[in-house]
Length: 389
Image 1: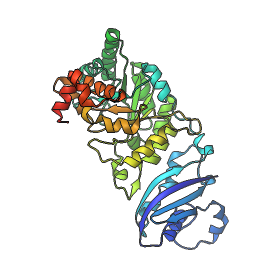
Image 2: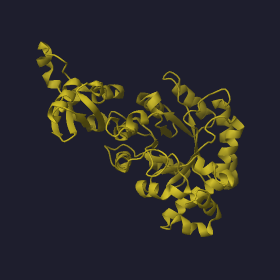
Image 3: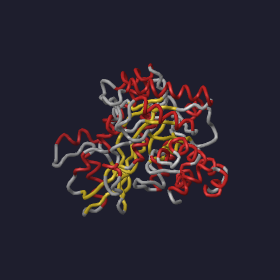
Image 4: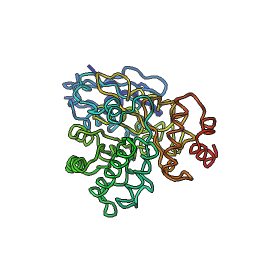
């Protein structure tokens, strides 16, 4: 069996030679002839297709240590990015054999399990990020969370930069937020997740998550690219709550469409290592978007894949009730649409903004355009007028 990596390459070399350079650099080759290289020839990468700007390289499965994702990346996304003969190179996708995928358990809580906790089965989930991003005290954070859930939201999350700073200690924040959400649930029956950001060093992340759960947290969040995929795997295997995965820092290597790493292999690795939700990008919002890549990430996260539970793709970044439709049409029912400013910036405040987001999702589900639905839903109408949609 082999691991097949797909690359996009810009080079002055013939594409066949560029592909061969990648195969050699990432397996048994080096810059000069080495006598003993022949002894390791069975482990050499091989070019299976090189055409135009695209190269497909197959690496023997034996090159990979089962279960060791950092080592997987050292093969398919290693020194090749520094080869002087390659002007630009982008890892577009990686196809893993079942034997390597199945070493990883995938999500303990996938889409089905998360929906069961909330009791929401027939629509996209709607979430928000506490705003301002940082600066609120624990009780202030709880008040904002409560207002959002009263408006009908399913998920409240910390910003990716908020962890356990002195102005908002995690222990106090979790207790305050969960107490407020419990109060709202008692009054309205509405259940919601609070994704507390437990991102920290490898030696601390599980302990931090367990402490948060002991204090009532019903979801944890990790910044996977700053913490590492192994940290996500330790977290997802070690806690009995869903795991929200943020992709902060991804633009450093995903934004240049001709260099770096696309979100597609990142999505594969997040599913292998156990995320419940993953930020994959919006079809319309404030962040750079690529429709084809969004489609691929959606499919990688949700299609059948050797029995691993599917993962929610999350659209986030500049979303508001007026631009939800392209995101919902792209991702479909099994997704999360998430707005920060698009909730809290509503002219009637957080609860009104939450209601407007929910109403926009309802309109899409009913096959009605938002402006038409807004005629009988004043919160949505106010949002559309405010954001001039």
